[in-house]
Structures are given as structure tokens and as C-alpha cells.
Image (cartoon, rainbow, N blue to C red; front, side):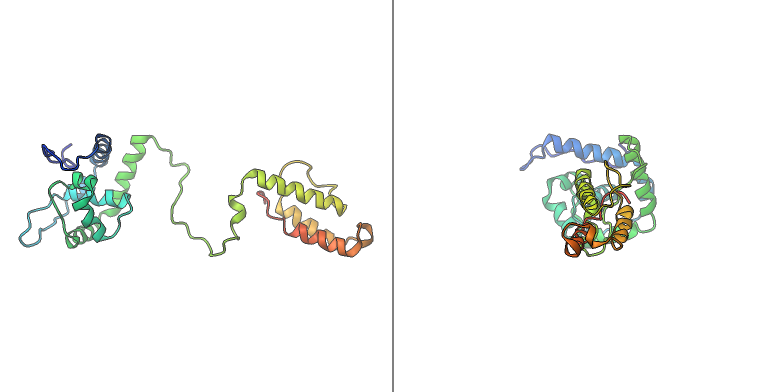
Length: 228
């Protein structure tokens, strides 16, 4: 590697980095090198703070990206990781950037962060043969109603049992003639059956009007199957 390289390791470590972790970090650096992100970093000029030696911007970039991957997103957390996290120390080498230096460096990346992100994603896709036909995004926003989306996460077996329960209720109400005997009953069909139930003569139902109201209420509470 030409850009994302590490310095020669010390002969003796007080707390040595495990070989397996080192292999992961080397693979991470190799991926950054293949991505070509260094092309954009070449255009970034990071002036050192007064009295501090020049910091290797490629090492700093790799350390910051790795910290983000670990969930260390604040400047203080990244600064501390450069001192105390052996994995980050392995990436940053002998440099110990302050939080202000890290902040300035990140701000300098503002104009090129998008192409850097694209190049890294493309390298990941090529390296691991990942298909982008289906993409999952973290951080999705949902309305703060814990029950509104509950049915989405239920397994198919749940909806099958729910449909079986609804079918039994419809049989008691004499409304099951055109309802599928197998599979999941759609919420649209259940809604139609609820409308029809309003026209049922209570005398046709065992238990009369009270039983009919109870059946309608039970059917109404079960109209969230998987299919719509």
C-alpha cells in the first residue's frame, strides 16, 4: 500500500494487539487503499497546530472512519481512542491528534465527503460481491405509536392463525361462503364482511343481538393480517 500504511511496529508492546485483530485492521486499510479515497485526501491540507509535528492525514482518516464504525462519534471519544484503544493506536501510529485537530480535519472533508463515501461503498461492493438490489437503511423514522406497526413484524404463522380465527367468526355469522378456507384473509375482505355484518338479522345468530355485537367486535379486533 502506498498511502494507508502503518509504521514499523515496536519490538515490545506492553499490551500487544491480537494477531486476528491486526489482520482485520490490515484488511480495512487495504480496502481504503483500493477505494481510491486517498485521491481526495491528497487535496486536503491539514496544517499542524503550533508546536505539533505534521499528522499523517491518511492515518488520521482511517482512525476516524474506524472510530465511527465502532460507534465513537464525538471528538472527545475519537481523541481518547487515539490514546487508549489499541486498534486505533495501531491505525494512527505515533500521532496523537487533539479533538480540535480532528474537528478541523473533518471540516476540511466537507466538500469531498460524498465522493469519498461513494468510492468506499463501491470498493466494498466489489470486494465482497454485494448485491445492491435490496438496500436496508438504518435510522428509519416511525410514528411514536408502539402498536401501529406491530403487525408488520409478526411472522406468517401469526397471520395464518389470525385468519383462521376470523374465518371461524365469519362462519358463526353466516358470512363465510365466499371467504378462502386456506391462506391469509386480506384486511380488505374483512372490512367488507364487517360492513355486511351490520345488515345481519340478530335472530339468525345464536344468542341474538348481544352475541352478534360481540362477534362483530371480535372480528374488528382481528383485521390486521399480512396481506392487504
